[in-house]
Length: 286
Ligand SMILES: C[S@@+](CC[C@H](N)C(=O)[O-])C[C@H]1O[C@@H](n2cnc3c(N)ncnc32)[C@H](O)[C@@H]1O
Image 1 (cartoon, rainbow, N blue to C red):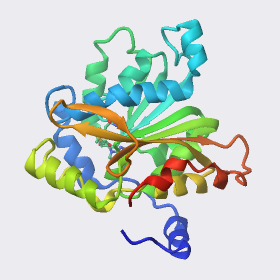
Image 2 (image 1 turned 60 degrees about the vertical axis):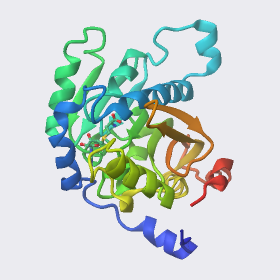
Image 3 (image 1 turned 30 degrees about the vertical axis):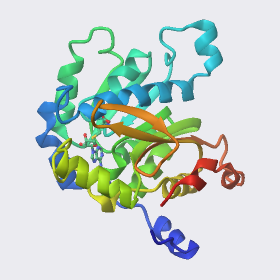
């Protein structure tokens, strides 16, 4: 894949923030599938099983291992405010609330929000811990800057009109010292072959047209955007989906799916961010 020159890269990421992250076609696609969010063996099966990786990843990044082991707390995320951007049917918001977090799930699709609310209402243990709102990250950023301990955008970056805007707003919304988490798809040839051609057209794991390779983003570019917004990448993991077992596992290989955790600087001093790059970024094959 062709590398951009530093000048091209700066131009690409320094353009003014777009008005909206919404790609209407993408949002309609998910609205049309909204009845299927909680069919655990259906269209969103891979998102349900992705919880096995992403929920512990978020928990362990926010709460130290020592605290988890020594205190054996049932709700380790008690007291944490988490914004789940592109929350869909609430597949990730709900387990985060079960760990004690107060969660705002925001989705651009009204249908998704209704499904998420309808599912939540039956769960007495967490129904007061989650609030779903039909809005975008840029709207929330106008009033809630710095209010969240963590902002999560899982499997969302590859569906928005402007990833740069989403990343910038996510970084505004998190408090200094807080965390941002992304899971998404790398912009590589192998990701196109397996993530689009095989997953959508051969194995039919996803509806054809679910993903557009043009919207995929490399961990390098994502880290660059985060750095520009005062957030330093702390952890980068590849994720592999086995279509036979329908399970995910962690892998060093970030060439297809990956998870990234970044932390916002405590002050506006970004002078140390460039030295904080994860070593695994050098290993990616894009
Ligand atoms: C692949 S789903 C991921 C859902 C959820 N994060 C999960 O992993 O279970 C992508 C979601 O992002 C939402 N979405 C797309 N563009 C958005 C935007 N600009 N702002 C907020 N949500 C958006 C879609 O409606 C859809 O629910």
